[in-house]
Length: 175
Image 1 (spheres, helix red, strand yellow):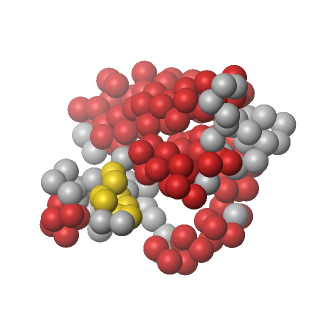
Image 2 (cartoon, rainbow, N blue to C red):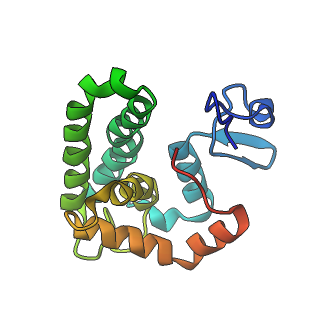
Image 3 (cartoon, one colour):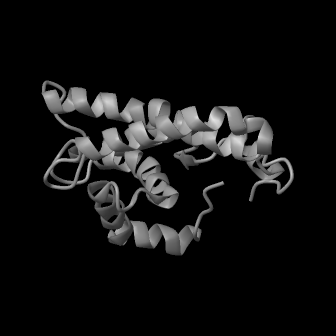
């Protein structure tokens, strides 16, 4: 749990990694942080079928979306979180951030394939990476406006692997 006042990582997490980054995994004695790196590592080791063939257009789309998830999509999400802690001091930024959230979430909606996935017709690494920004979109009230994105989140939450992860790790908070 993060510190209730500072929102900083607990000392136990900082002891594992100097930046107190979460998520992190340890595999064969190797500590890996950063969501994208973790997903790429796990796919290379256990799920190569979740990454398109390197010589395909789908692979280019995969690369773009893997970076979009942590870069472009998360930027307005985090800015929105931070200004929510500032009260009136953050108000001047709110309209621009709201516009960027809607723009990014709407873009994600347009990218979903008829299969309900982003790159492949089955679960892919990009789906995993985009699941968190998609969850945030639904939590922020976009369920009705972006039905394909909402269905994507519902599909992710219904997966047995997701259910096992929640059972093992417990529910998580978004702030």
